[in-house]
Length: 296
Length: 318
Image (cartoon, rainbow over all chains, first blue to last red):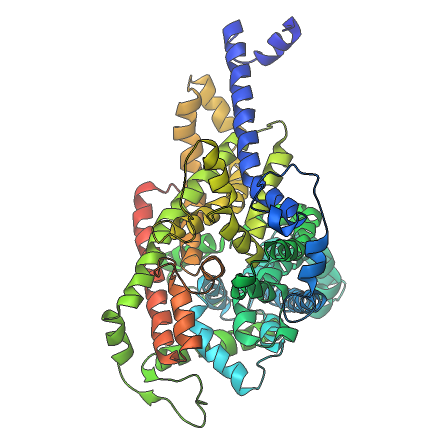
């Protein structure tokens, strides 16, 4: 240990060599614990990916993730294993996600502008109602909602899963955007007003461009939640051609007798890839979104 | 601040200010135009359905009959009376409460512990944070629940690991005593999202508090219990309340891990899974509505109890 590090480490606290040694030890222990924890956390995912490339009869015979006996056969077999091509399911999930993202971005930002910027009668009450709906268990509206969509003849269409998004039913994102709009400097809006911009122009040309980070957070969360959503598609979509990947994967549970674990793992991996990409691309926005609003 | 914190503040302000002087509301017209989609949504998809499901909970409503052509029969409190004597209902209630009461605190404690370990300029922080955060984004998906069935299966990696030590363990997923435990572990595995919130909360604690305490001779442990923890209690509290609310609604994991059955021996028959089966497989939507309202009341009671309890341990800086 050089003298330089010693002075650096002890600059404001105690200056004994044993203290430095203790700190070093503490740091090593801490990193060891974190690395072990990381490995435990991530191991199931790595096992999933490696197993999806193993021959079907090897998956449970050899649990190791270190193997050279790899094949893409599971992906080829699994792709057409579930009543329709997996491309169909991927496309359905994509349509649902894009629809939900568009709906949330438009409707939530409109509502957020009103709550965040405008003074109007009933504001506090409506805002409180909006916050309360974030915490409302959806089961309490489930049966009548289902009845409405059934009577409209919307079963087996994507409409029950997309139309509500255009009516700002995901109140969490309204709240997230309100928080963001409130933090914008007031002078900008003042300037817009003096320049004679009406509310709609202020919304469209000033607020929306400034709140791009909040919109990005909304888009990524909406994507992840819609892509993973299982309950909605389960009750509204009954024919395989309409299934998103989440409900399609359920097919592997129904046909357990075939025990084609390879295909099941392979298609599970395929369904997770978009989520993983969203995580890589959007990590910054996801963490920032969480940091400003809490979970919900 | 979380939505819950915001709501608490609104309530406090309302109590303090009482009758307010008449405010000028120059933006009425514009505001209601901007809010139009939200208002339609809240009336058509939230408040209307809430009232409708309350009414339906007093009826015998079969899903297969159109309620417009055949108005469901009003049967008063029969659905609720039936619930009281329904063993399957109480089983699902017990399973869910067990899940909530065990998994939520464990997940939050782990999240807090890791957030503390990762705090303040730790080398490699972004990498650790990403690794811990990733499972919380994937954890709600069907694919992960499918994976969990295999991880904890008879021949899964958990038993493979235990075999190294010569332990011959049962198939966890197929065992009535352990199946719920695997779903609890799945929930704990997603501790990354509360961890990220705790990390953000830790960052908001002014450095000078710690410096001042150091100068006064407070050690690490003392500083944690006298500064960090009290200042973090509102965030812990909001996380706790919201996580409880959402944990009560767990569906996907229970459905997939049990293959849609709630088995083995109804040990993973979560409340929402039972509700789904009652309404959508047995078509008894009146009973399902009554269950939904009972759930709302239970969640409200848990939340109210938590708020009452918070007086004794949550510290508000304001």
